[in-house]
Length: 310
Image (cartoon, rainbow, N blue to C red):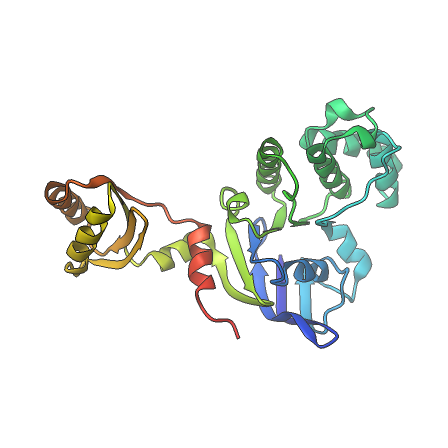
């Protein structure tokens, strides 16, 4: 659905995006993650056709960005990290205005507005003034406005910024529902926990470059190198003794200790891991818990971030 080829963007002499080639498949919900200044916003603006690349090529649903802007705008919806609304209008008036701006057929406007209101949970706010809405509701209204022309691709830049915890959960559920409807989404954030629960693929950026990209499940499997195990202990003395024990075992690799927690990878069958569990618990009374840890997109990000980016 989305492909870029050696995409590069300079601001004067400063590179914001450098030689980015990536692919997001149809129906994916892709997490675009990286620290502030990594180039995420510049990349999203180029995908939306709002920023001209210095070099490289972008295709969205077979449309080359920059060559057919009208067709691109019919396909793509973009929600920026900051947005302005017409506070004096009601929600219904606001959506009617943008439906007409998107040239939605007059006979379809009411049905389309009702559809996006229901999808974003704003049906009860139809007659409310936009200026009276909470931050979370305003965010949902921007997404509703962006969905009026039924885009195949939705780009969201830091959509959870400034939202309270309840509004973040509602936003997460909305993005999940959009993904279930077949929309291809690219959602950027520097807060990984906002994306890990609902994204199926990930693009990790640092200093303008993509350092890792692909299906989250495949990247996690590649990263694990065995069965990921976490051991939690009672005191620091127990940590030191157990690390020495683990280092002596060939099947235990990638040993990392943080405070009273040890993470490692066990290379072998689960029956052998169960035997190791029983043995260690019998020998080390300081073990509080011993369990298989589920790797996440955050683990992928941290592993990718440890590599030097020139």
